[in-house]
Length: 264
Ligand SMILES: [Zn+2]
Image (tube, rainbow, N blue to C red; front, side, top):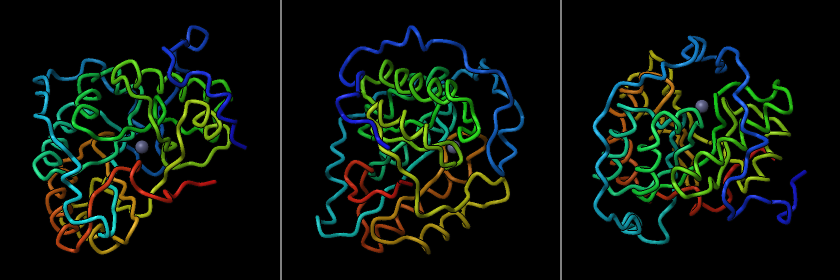
């Protein structure tokens, strides 16, 4: 049950979360079948990185030069922004003039706000991936609310953009999370192509081969720029982009893709 638009109280308003601004519930950070998330919270002392340079004005509309009739594919990146990795993903996307959609973690936006801003400045769409990446389908109601609302507010504070999409951590369906996402103005978006790039054993060649083999018109590809070591994803990205382009696909953000697969 979605909440009516009239209840989107925070749309186009400054964040007001005094009552919501409580610390996240302590507990192990989880990710289904991915033990990278069982290692505990990340160090807050993220390694220093050079500020991501503001990209030159990049009319991403040119990325649709393949023509309006070309089949569309949307690349999505989860679990960032992640210092040391998101910069590389942004650089490859900029080099090849590809728009994408990034599902940001609130905790990571707080750690690397400059990267969250760089994502938006480069013309990419952003979504809400909750705060800590803990599963929400078994979380208390107030935690679900806090994870989603706090993250939406953090993203808006840092980027001046309200996240238009919501993807639950690990894709776990949870009615209350979808309702809170709707209240913050986000629509659910899962994926249709998953090369499982977060697995340590997946090579760049495998990631690219799976994406190119499973691509279809309207595909939503889930990749990761954060959550752990994603060097194989970064290495695979040029082959993914060049291969999909050679197959005739145009790249779009989720905003531009009709009929995005959710879970309602
Ligand atoms: Zn995730």
